[in-house]
Image (cartoon, rainbow, N blue to C red):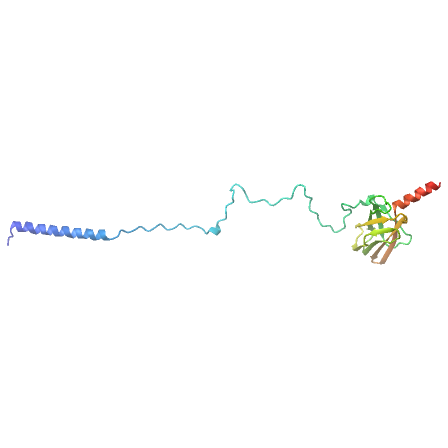
Length: 220
């Protein structure tokens, strides 16, 4: 059956309105939804702080150089097996006199001596002694024999093991009185493979020798 034209027009408008309404409702539903927030960028991985060496305060400077000794500091001393031939206060062996050995001597040792100055009565003076073994041995002892009028401020020297290349030194403070003898005696003992040896050595006191010469000149 045929519908009137105005009804068809009304139906088309109603359908168009329903379609428009549906579109509007769909649009409102989409706008109500929250917009998606973009995820933050992933953090860049860095090495642990303890694995990165600390930069120096001044990048132009390299690692600190080892400490250097002062220009005027003395060089380090190397240990030596043999005794030192002469220390800072010891005279050279060539400048020392040979002590006179007694007739009966069985120790293979030479004794040298030197005074720091003249032996003046009642004034101390330093006496340097040097024992020079001619062979190896042990228990080397050097001691000044006590005598009236001479005071010796030092103990005996004792060396456990000696060698022919060694020079064994001792310093003694000697104070002689006005009536002191003209010489002192020094006893030297040492043990060797064939037995023990000993010997007496005579060290003249310079003031006694000089006084004797002056007396002899006056008598003449």
